[in-house]
Amino acid sequence: MNDIKEFKIKNSKGQRLNVCEGNDVENLKGVIIYLHGIGAHHQVIFDCEDSFPYKSNFFALSGYKSYGLEFSGHGKSDGIRCSIDNYLDLVDEIKLLIIYLKGIHGNTKFFIYAESMGAGLSVVYQIINSKESFIDGYVLMSAMCGITDKIKPNYFVKELLFKMSYVYPTLPFLGATDHISASCRNEDYLKHKLTCKYQYNEKVRLNTARECYLVCEYIEKNKEKFDVPVFILHGIDDTITDAKKSISFYKSVNNDKKRIYLTKDSNHILTLGIDKDDDRPSEILKKIVSFFDDLCN
Image 1 (spheres, rainbow, N blue to C red):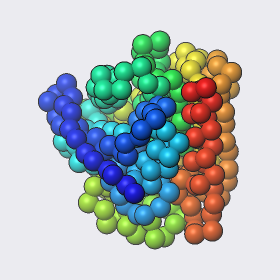
Image 2: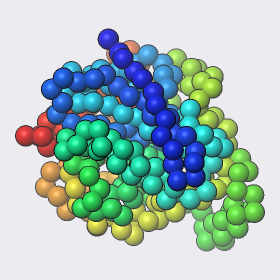
Image 3: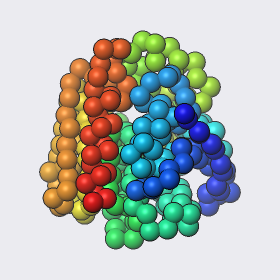
């Protein structure tokens, strides 16, 4: 049922980026590019609706071909694990894959399905590339659209951490991944995630924390420039990314083809149910297909 392949492309630094390729589709409507969050990847952690094979098969049944980009330093890609020297390098990696796939799929509709940090990077990609982004619509899941006030450092702490980040860039220092573990209510998934060799479960490196902060800062200053169709999904009690920032971003989007879905008592990963009786992951995937279909008609 699931025919997942992998191939490599090289970024501007010569690093090999791993790309997961989903099921082939006969009557192709569109191409979906998946972008993961900080420390994550597209390798299978746990057999559920959130896994790349499951989503690839689900969307293929509706005419959409899936590709999952693993950023440098993540998953099976080259680079120091979860180390980001400049977030624009990752934005360039998004563009690199899009151009590569445009050479294969031509004028087919292209969509981005991005989570958390990947969602923030995709927003930056769209704003920077504007009408030449080649993307027809975005699904932003638990997006990193701004620094939540609960963890935003004061000016002096920020300046100190920034200075340290340039002296000791790869130092694992901040405990954000601890919050990620605490936020996961699916114990079976969490057990597998903490033992997955492709998952980065250590403290966040100083350079990575700095660049995530700068992504959020850029979005907050430029969000009015994002004007393409978008479907935003967020848990209102998400402890990793701030739903209020996603709502503010949604309101700023100058496009009538925009949707928003809010829920509560969920995981940071909305397509991961809190237990076997949680039917929201399936409902969310159906809503995403509906969004894509509307943009293809």
